[in-house]
Length: 303
Image (cartoon, rainbow, N blue to C red; front, top):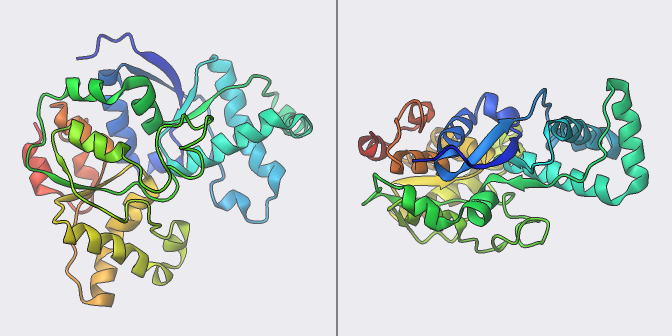
């Protein structure tokens, strides 16, 4: 169990934590203290803009959204900003680097923020939750915390295309994995006592926001992911990305109708696997009840 003296981070939940990705938020908050990670929620946070912020808004409005979050984080202390959402990480990390490196742009962002009596003058670091687990916590600590190993569970680790691109293999991204064949999700799986199956499409795109708007254009992309998981005889697909989780789970019925398949593969977050492996509560900690396609095998393993 955690001794409660973890490293502190300012936690930016992002919009998906309030809806489709609520089970990622709940399970991450549950496992964090068990791994020595103290999450202090960012006060008065706003949407990062994600893909919508790039549609007709221009650079400054999008950076101002990021700048406002960073300005509020700055008021909470110099600790790193942590987010679990791939889109939030991409937008906030990239925006932070632009603001820090471009003096003129920082001035324009601060001019916009001044309307709300805010400014961003520090150089905070924005980090992904998975990178923090790899670099600050370490896989060995994850293994040490396991009291309920997920023996016999076959997991297809679906990283998605955003979590590791373009920052994972850079100094700013913590150099925690590669772009094309990342291993961290398989390492998480094996640390929990489960089997990481071979999964060649681990960084394939699920269609992202296009799947939400025009799913008929992306069903074939999601089908490739499901085909690979079924071929590997996976019990569940695990992912770190809220949008990947939503798309791969929610469109299985549509894919079955379109292609005559019979997919019903549970899609969970890595943090849900960890919560179960840590012997935590299936509902309150692992949030397994929030998955649309329930994993009977994983739920039976849960306490």
